[in-house]
Image (cartoon, rainbow, N blue to C red; front, top):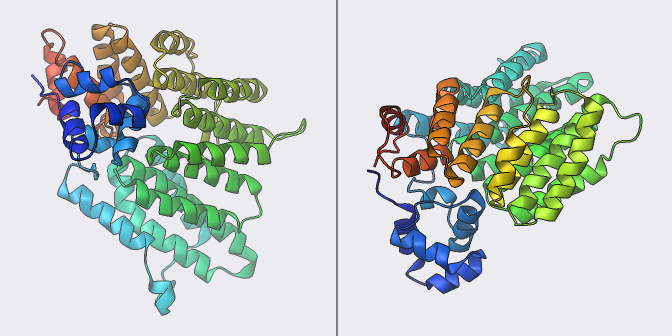
Length: 397
């Protein structure tokens, strides 16, 4: 049976300087929750609760879950993250040593960017992580060597490369590096003639801020971005799509602060925008549409611990939802979380197995499925399928 570790970690991190009451007040949670977690009478809590506790203790959520900050499970993965860091923070340009002789043409770089985004949305972090150091180097060289007539396109592609890098680093447990990549993506986007590139880059930055636990900053950036691109009656569908995606990420930030009303207002505006787009889309690599509204609404309900609402809204997911594999998998985690909290352990187990079967590599890089499986292992007699899943996710402690 897995050993409950969240409570132990909270106690270890708290005891040098805080009482249970101090921590509860700082995290804005019930002292009873802290007490039950530390005593092992409760093995986990909602995403929002864990994030608030982690923020109060000045640690990453991963540390509460018993995992080191760097989530890659193998030395090879960790070395690849180091290679991304080296490429992202290169000083070759400062020393006049930037080698753009072998830089790919912009058409070739564009194809590589499309492949990289495809790998990201499919949750294929292994090959993606392996290619990112070279892709970053090529993107910088392309900007450096671009003719004046192609400078905007080169900056556009380089911005996209840095957005992919930022998002991938989040799944590899390196959000601070991800922030650096997102800020560089935003700087490069400002050099392009298309304002939607900057909005998409700000959306990625909002994602990074969320994963850093900087919910107030994330909401400020995302709401300001949405206000700055408020669509008019003749807005293009792509404009509406990016706008809607920014609104939904802003709702996620509001929910994680416990601001349910603000989150609901942003979701309402996104719902109306989805009616205007009429279908699921991915524009500027921002996913948006009716299915994404359902997905993010479910997420917000889980975060504010309204599990009945989460289960109800999840049932409205369109049968023909055109969500990328990673987005669809993230939604199934929320569904399983709600099912578990509502006492439907077998349904939660089935949902997690379905998710892992469809996206094994994506699942291997996520923390929450591991936590949910670990809790399921403590409830009654685990099935053979659950034990096997726990072993694959390293959740069988």
